[in-house]
Amino acid sequence: MSFSNTFDTTNTGPGVSNREDLTDVLTILAPEETPILSSANKERASATNVEWTVDSLSAPQTAGIAEGADVTAFTDQFAGRARLGNRVQKFRRDYMVSDMQEAVDSVGPAKIAQAEAKAIRELKRDIEATLAGTQDSAVEDGAGTANALRGLGDWIDSAGPADVPATFRTESASIVDVTDDVFAESELNGLISSIFKVTGTSDNLMLVADTALRSDISDFARVSGVANENIRSVNYDGNSGSIKLSVDLYQSDHGIVSVVNANPDCMPTQAGQAGMSGYVVNPEYYGVHELIPMGSTRLPNLGGGERGFVDCALTLGVYHPGAHGKITASA
Image (spheres, rainbow, N blue to C red):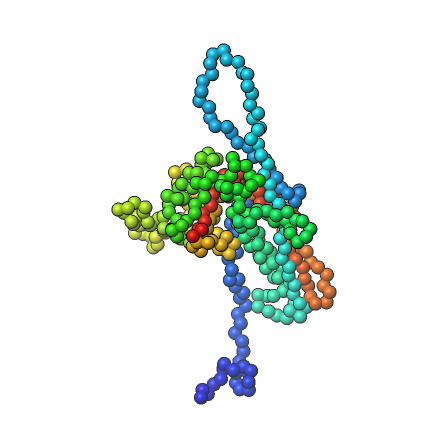
């Protein structure tokens, strides 16, 4: 039988007099980055349904005009114009701290100000997950269905959505479905080229990549797609203490793409390999429209303690679905 019982702080013995060693450090064990929300243009909304118009140019004509030919037919230059839109969704997180908790000393600390700040951080993650989602928009009906915005995953769809004319939908070549658990460099190049054919520019592209996808992209610096050469050579500076093999900027045939880490808690769940999801977005062609800016409201203290909520109302504007692409894993 052991002489000391420092492990026992409830029964009689020396253990009951031992002090706690609780450091004044609080660690949040969850990803907090919101690259999709942070990189979006911020616009002001004035209605619960935000709309914008899109137009396109006709195919180039190369036929000549005969000398002396009169103009006998005329073109409606606006016949192909369309209106797109998205519903404004409200987001909310509540918080409360009891009067007793507000009075005692605590690690962190755990006061009303910290509860409010944490609710704001959670609200931003809610927004990021919704923007990155695959859900369609919904219209409030007064019977339990609330307004909901359409996420990027549904906007970037070559077969829809139904209210987006085929001319303005994402090209099928801009969507890569990874079926062999490996995202190849040739697939990324094909996706970028497809976007370039739509917009004529791809210098502003940003790839928001989940964990497995990010790992495959980093392998672009090491692994070659050539059959007789599996490993790429890497120049090493003898005066340097490290070799960087991750890819932050990818230079393709049609522009430079910045690669950023997605928040893994906010990306869509994949039917295939977990973490194999990503969006190639052009920040020039999407934005967040705020009807109610993010703010905090304190509610009356009814005796139990301080309480309140943080909220906002916004929607996602995808000004041209064809200007973006995505990577998924269905099997």
